[in-house]
Image (cartoon, rainbow, N blue to C red; front, side, top):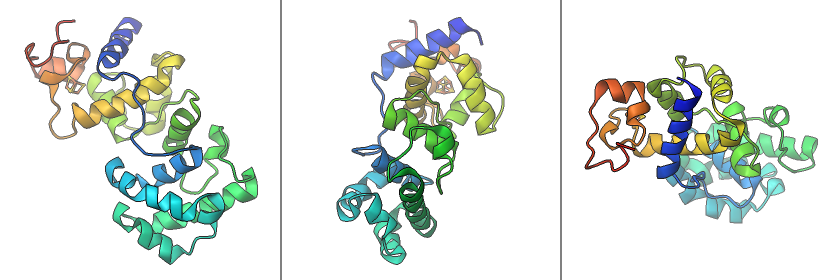
Length: 222
Ligand code: SF4
């Protein structure tokens, strides 16, 4: 895949996803961090049902750091893996207070020192919380990058590195956000809707596997 193809992919995604953003409700980087921890193995829709009440109850980093684990577990139970998530949220908040003056750092190396925060979560915080170029490699990005033919590897760190080489830095956030939406809406895990896909002609999987329906996809011939 060459630079011209990448440009066309970005252009195609740009036609469908104008100013894509994370779907997690948040008012600041700390709330985004908590919401992102909760979103592991859970949908954003479900997380968004829990967080408004959660944020008004615990209010800030001190509130979460001093939370009673059992009560917090009950508050976030519907997001799944609630024991582990509650433990991470409390530990992460304590570390923010002890090491970072209670604020979320805008730095990858510092973010990954926080309990419950790996490169994916850190990239979400950088990109969606601070507007700093980053590519968060989640299950959608792994699947789509391979299907499209941008990478041929499943390891998230290698994918992140390769995508950063392929995609211009000023498009990292856009790519990261739009590809997740594309994975949720069109390029679904079990049955990708290739006939409705705006980048079908540039995609290894779609081009080989299916013929686009120009009536369903007004951009297919673009
Ligand atoms: S053409 Fe199909 S496989 Fe390729 S990105 Fe689109 S929906 Fe996914």
